[in-house]
Length: 347
Image (cartoon, rainbow, N blue to C red; front, side):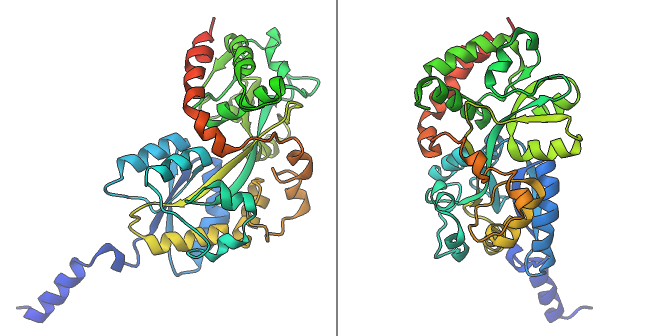
């Protein structure tokens, strides 16, 4: 028969709280696909190899879908850290779904550039920079295009893919077109008029699995996209995927990294955020996947840096759009896309 003390010890171990179980990893949710593959290789694995904390990658879909997960789990969080686009993260912050972060809590925030520190507001800072591009089939589209106007050519009818809001690609495209039309990215009536005219040529307003794949498998000739993923897909396709940074300009896309409110592994989550923002992690991911670094002390190989949003020639094309101001327009633009643009498609 077991002694009373043995039973008590066994019971104590059995009912040990999750925080006492060192093997129980923290959980990061962010983008699936090639982002997951590359972020796991150069950021997650080195973090886990340190042997102090562990983190599992939970693949998400769009930022909007990830926000939905946070809302569903509000009273019983299952995630610790989340990386999402800045406009969606602002909603999570306003709803109390993620925690405020500052340099007192995480000293590494002091190494970030000014935009990275301010873009997340009171909550998580920027962890990557990117910019909007148009991708195209370089075999079919000759000569290489330089302007968004090429997509309005009737020869490409049914061969265009746009990611409509709530995907922020649609918001970014609208801002670029508004700025080109009026000089003011917020004054979007002209942009919506042009988008309505383009709508009948659009095959899909929700490219699945993504626009890069649909161009490479001959489903589309043009698609909206982000530079970092486009650069990686161009390399993998041997140059088949073309990338246009249009004369109309581009906008920065910012992803922020956030600590989930009530995170079950808060200390490990904070440790990972500190690592993800550090110069070594930022350098590794930039050189692997061409996202612009947010840590100002990261020294990036020149051949990689020139292909990122931080390259001087790319930054020179960025229109003066403020994502904090975009948040105020987001819902009205979402509605206008549904009423005026998507409804005009397929005619």
